[in-house]
Length: 168
Image (cartoon, rainbow, N blue to C red; front, side):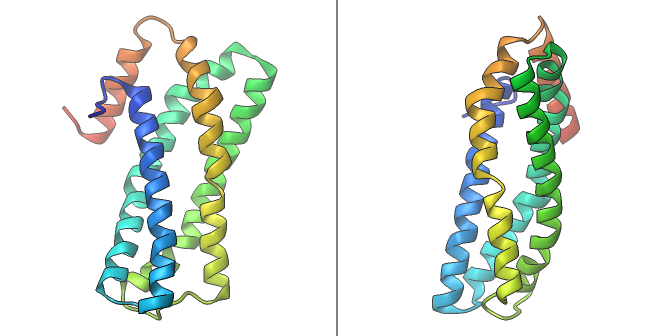
């Protein structure tokens, strides 16, 4: 089991959970087409909302506080450009979630089974924001950030992540 003592492994585990939640969102939409808005669909919508309301913002903050700054300070032009793009992605993900959440909330509250065309497009757009983003972080940014950590930075990262989440 991954723990905060291994913060980069924790960040990667969060990516796995994001992928699972996006997969659940896709399965929810298929379920709605087949079975309508039943109890299972409402619970799936609540599960997706809970993750993207609570865990995803913390994950992005982890990256903004601990992963991106060391890369930006080193000044490698290609990595700086990539991190700037990822920071912009975070802002777009926040806006995308603000638009997608009401669509899921309507399902969770027992509303119509299928989102209308605009709602479906909103969910599609939100999900699409993640694929390239996650891969860039895993393949390029996390290794670069880890390679440049100062002594003690990993322990400080662990401590701050735990404190912010109320974990002792």
